[in-house]
Image (tube, rainbow, N blue to C red; front, side):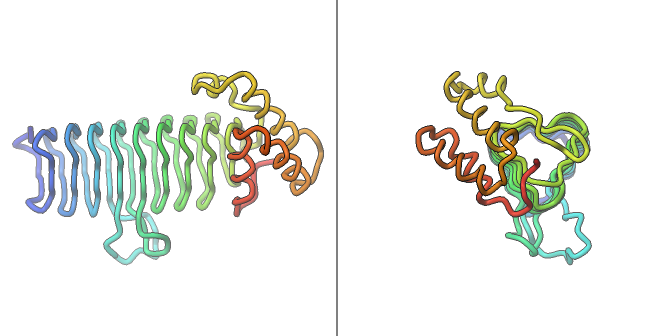
Length: 256
């Protein structure tokens, strides 16, 4: 399953059915789980752990050193879950000692061509990064979030679950769950209702989320007052709790 033209370090640990294409280089301290397919001309460095059933296309760079001038060669790590797809020329960097030292990617994510995940990012599950979507360091992305093509997220920013970044969006503040943002700088536009329908949210749940959005963005309330109104709504409607908790934990302030 390993092409004779590939270079695989003796210190790398690959499951018996891992496929490795020609001219790929896999360095030491790399672990790759069963059913993973690594295409041609890929570079994987470590310490990196890759789970089962992943697909890595040509020219991707996975687990190389962080693009951080403070990095001095410390043995930081990259951890990747299962069934992710990394398309052509994706770049994913390891963590730094200025955070937890680990970049983490969950499962069932799609990273389209030229997308970039910087050091110390935490990516959830079922996300989509369209072509050239890029993250600065220390970014957190919630489950089911979608990043449009050419979107960029500033370092230390958080993106909530089920959020949608329109193509070309420049995000410098936290994006709460469920909403669509667009522009430079990114601004809220609507609830991501079509995606919520696909994810099985009921009409009542979506209506409640729209009401929370109205309170936050259309009521002219100060953020503290809007948050208090949303807490009252969340007491009866659990789907609002993610909205409230996210805003309460925001450290960069939210898009408004």
